Image 1 (tube, rainbow, N blue to C red):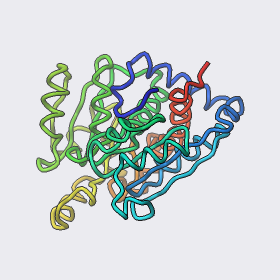
Image 2 (image 1 turned 120 degrees about the horizontal axis):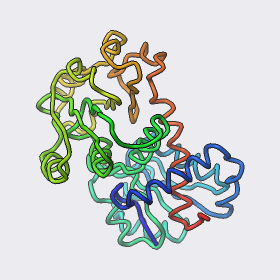
Image 3 (image 1 turned 90 degrees about the vertical axis):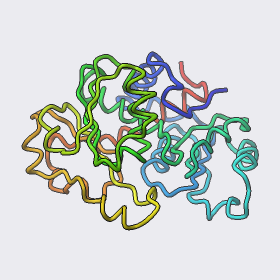
Image 4 (image 1 turned 60 degrees about the horizontal axis):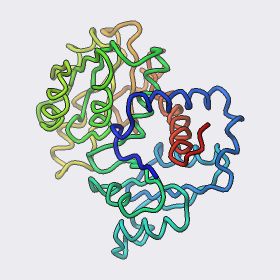
Length: 305
């Protein structure tokens, strides 16, 4: 039995196989419509979610399976004090696979150690978000044909942004990836990402504060929102939330083929006028998340081939 806690749990070769499967599913979804007949996915979401939870549910339903679960801690026995360990023991008797989101770093890992079914980390605090990273990698490969020889700008909340942390961990394994880390000083990537991931792996990166300075050299701009739920006080959040706004005017500084990604939800960091730009790929990125999650569910349930 296998779990997914981090994108590092899959080798580059396994990621390629996963993306190949996702591409096959996207091109011929009817072929996979009954792969999970009789299987159940439990979605245990202790934090609010739209895209991740619904895309997991859509993925399982598209495969012919069914879904059960809860969408907030308040609607589960966590409100009564039940531990994650006990919850997953119970869920293991009801479902065949579980996707778990939790505000505490490491909670899905704890669950996986007690589970009798595969557990997928659907986001744990400010730590990791591996299935968003799978979505990001699949989107990049779909846009460019491969993953490599790219300059990628990561902009916004790089301190608390679990999507950014997971994506950096995954991309350092590919050839000639150059990172431009765009953030105010208060929201720089954590030191463990800078030292233990980027520098330790001899990744080429630089940190800048102005988005305008970085735009002309980027192949991909990965925007993120400043996350209110990660701040300890409202004043800091209000001060930082409008630090970066990607506008139509700023897009004119970018390459004609630079693509804009965003894990969503968007607040105001990308102006709605940018949505009509052919380089805006974030809604297609969200759509592709269903196919990669379908491929992941099939892989973890050993239903491939």
